[in-house]
Image 1 (cartoon, rainbow, N blue to C red):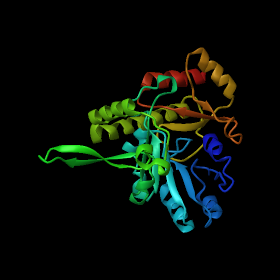
Image 2: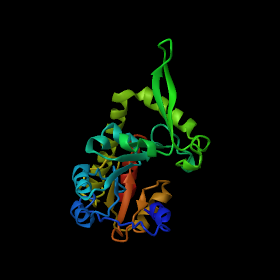
Image 3: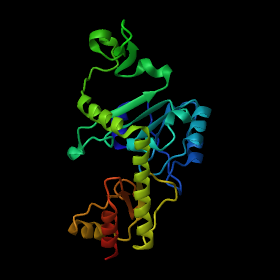
Image 4: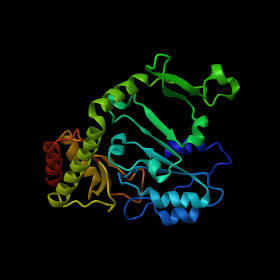
Amino acid sequence: RAVVASYLQNLDDVQLEEIPFDATGATDVDQLAIRLNDQSMCVVVGYPNFFGVIEDLAPIRTACTNAGAQLITVTTEAVALGLLKPPGDFGADIAVGEGQSLGVPMSLGGPAFGFLACQQKFVRNIPGRLVGETVDTDGRRGFVLTLATREQHIRREKATSNICTSQTLCVLGATVFMSLLGKSGLRRLAEINVLRAQEALRQLREVAEIEPVFSGPCFNEFVMGARDVERLFSKCAANKIVPGIALKKYYPELPDGLLVCVTEMNEGEEIERFVAVLTE
């Protein structure tokens, strides 16, 4: 949210409006429908969202259509798309996301790579290159650069971007990662994320008597209510555990909220140890 606000702060003709969340942790669609009008440009929604909740994009798509606004989805956990219904199936105009979880090391915050997809009618507005598959004169499979709308050497002053970055190595690593997993493997990886997150949530409720803040379905993140966040962080630090993100700084209305993430990298023993520390 802060990054988007920073980018838009000097655009006098663009107004950023934040839609509240409901009891499930998802976008309050009723409030969204009320605030949308014929001046609305787009609706940007996390899929899953910041709280880890899986948004129902269907009513959001309907609200956008009624107001003539575009729907843009943002997926920070790419593995989730191995299990969730694709944004395009809901009629999303643009889908973007972060590809780090597709086999790219954390590396203290980077580098990683992003991905972007859009409806056909927006293809020529993409700030990048499109590579198409074809065959050569001998019928052999090959790839060619079919569209390059941003490049200065081609478009000159009409280029859509004059900033060039290379994420090739990270994308190559992710391509190998996904190739080794295959379609069923990627889905299985996503299922493991869900199962381990649900197991952590179950133990937190039954053993540590800590309840989730929201009732909506989640992927591999969830918000739990911590009775004393500072004390919890101190206990976890003493045991060399990173418990999650305290939400008070970002959402003052959630002073006891703690965002917890459990992925395929967290074994059952780690989950049990985390829960045990919270019950001390």
